[in-house]
Amino acid sequence: MHIPMRNSRPLKTIAIASGKGGVGKTNVAVNLAVALARMGRRVMLFDADLGLANADLLLGLRPTRSLHDLVTGTASTLEEIVTEGPDGLLLVPSASGISGMANLTPAEHTGLIRAFSTYDQPLDVLIVDTAAGLQDSVTSFCVAVQNVSVVICDEPASLTDAYALIKVLHQDHGLRRFRVVCNMLRTPESGRRLMQKLSSVCMQYLPEVILEASGMIPMDEDLRRAVQRREPVVSLYPNSLSGRALVELARQADRWAVADSDVGGIGFFVERMLQGSC
Image (cartoon, rainbow, N blue to C red; front, side, top):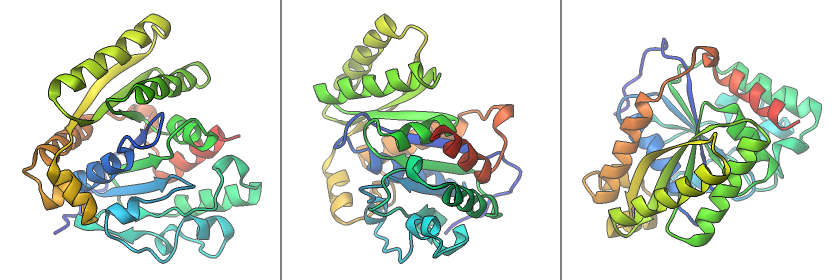
């Protein structure tokens, strides 16, 4: 049962990003969102993978409307497209066919800001599941949030592409702090090695960047079964190794601070997002 929260908490915004696909980024975003909702937080998950949206599938939902309806004007308010998921989680579904926020017309920009700005329901956390890679929409979302979490796995390409993403966000957009989630781990030691490798490269070439290990998520059979059943592992198998690790990630995220300058609501986030896409 969802427990509504007070509306006095400033909105915490988190982007879940990755340098490449196939690292389990959306699974992390979905389970983080559900775990926070199960803690009593009022959570909105924004599926911002504008080409390959699939957060709804992992949640077992079938939305009838999406972000595309807001952009095209067939929906005028966020409430019209928001879909409620497990434990009161609110999903903003995306859809294929939107190439990126940078390609929206000025009128579409204005309409999107208005739709988000007029959303007056209490929210504690907004989680943005970005697309994988370095497309413009990804950097726009990452610049707009307070916390950027980069998901990596034990593959050479994952590390290389994660470093490239961090480099672009730092050198071109001024971001300095990144939280790193090591996902689909065979052993805890493999996660420590991954973090050490990424930290070593960043210390050498991006000395001003600060990396924080925020999650070590093992791959287990329960996680696979949850994905196959289209349910979050934190709901279906909360006591599994992966479920407990994702709940711990949520506990950490719940403690992440919100700067005094970032106390605006969801409309403020969208304004920053669209400014970053210009």
